[in-house]
Image 1 (cartoon, rainbow, N blue to C red):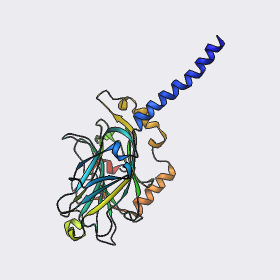
Image 2: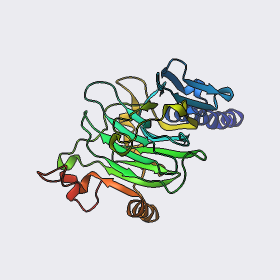
Image 3: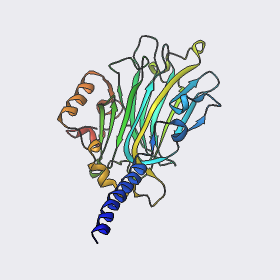
Image 4: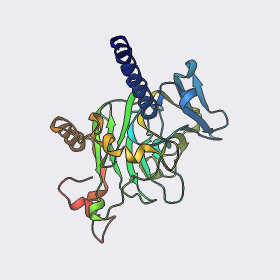
Length: 296
């Protein structure tokens, strides 16, 4: 009996370890290798993967841009990507990096990096869509040159809030305010997408500065993609039932006081547009969430 009990003692930790490995696979199935995690979706060969899957580039020329999407769909989690943006005169170009669901009533959590003339800063454009409705833009300059090296751009998404991070620094927090009638993306799984495309009709100074095609091809580079997120596999996915545990995970909690101070620092020094203060755009009155003490 003693030996049987001892054998059982050895088996229980092994079973628990197997359970933990399965859970880890389901919640962090995408990491590192682009061959395993990404599909190049358009661009006729302009999206390329190098270094055994460690590096991906998108390019844009006069004929076409390019783009990719994740193989998996996700519902809640932390998405990280290191990106080096188009260097030099990138006026007219847009590098988009975002989560998006399918269908006409889509959800979307959006970074767009708006190119500019040499020496002028990139503009980081952020937006949140729910059920096909956006109009929640905030724009920022960065406190570094995003073309000189790779930097980490992250999206934290859970049932209670969305946080945009740059190199671990929060730049925007968007809370679930369904209690006041504001739709929030929480029911539709989303894929990670990225694209590099020409938008010189609006991207740089409202379209006044056009793309200089003599500098083409334009190239953006990606590495270290990581999705610490719940992989959606079917309508019976455990992502919704596990949303409480996702919300309570350390990386999913609301900002602590130190990160709140960093958020305020970014918004005080680097925010250049906030839909909540655009009274000309909303002459009938600013959106209701903008009147709250903790603005989104």
